[in-house]
Length: 201
Image 1 (cartoon, rainbow, N blue to C red):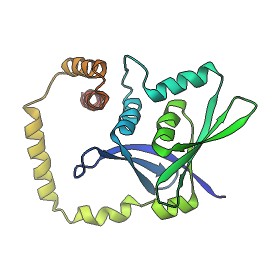
Image 2 (cartoon, one colour; image 1 turned 180 degrees about the horizontal axis):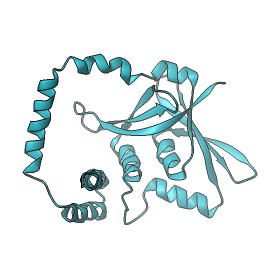
Image 3 (cartoon, helix red, strand yellow; image 1 turned 60 degrees about the vertical axis):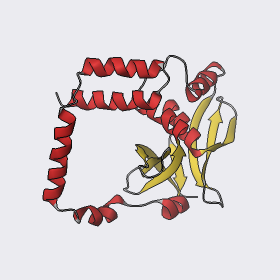
Image 4 (spheres, rainbow, N blue to C red; image 1 turned 120 degrees about the horizontal axis):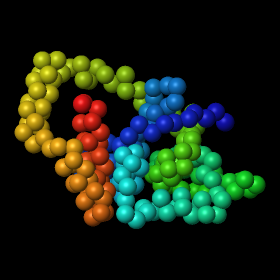
């Protein structure tokens, strides 16, 4: 069976339906992407790792990594597939160096564990054909927005944000407080803001 490797692009938030997120996977060496709808806890677990947010106690997937390390188990890879209902699921392939075992999983949990274990993510050609999309083919929608209007919007957004700009140190303190309060989504958001400010220096 033909397989394609995927890489994690990031997470998007559905502004229409509260608490709904989508994890975006991109075809390695290609341009097709697969969006997978996930809930807040799963988005939080993935975002914390992406933003390298340090939590005072291990999250569930961090605990799983600690468990695997203690027992000499390694996550070799995961494979995303679709159930007949259309819901995404995943097979997690584990090994102890001798035996190989496959464990059924929700796709979001498998992805959260894979990015911690640095394990490759695969899917079939069938899934990529059915659920994948090419963002370049959807560029025509954005081209309908006049460039002048877009620039004006960016300028206005920049003006609003400049009045509430905080120092990196203040943001670091807030990020740490958010992590200690287990508000990991806010901590991840603050970490992304810090990174953006540091890159802009």
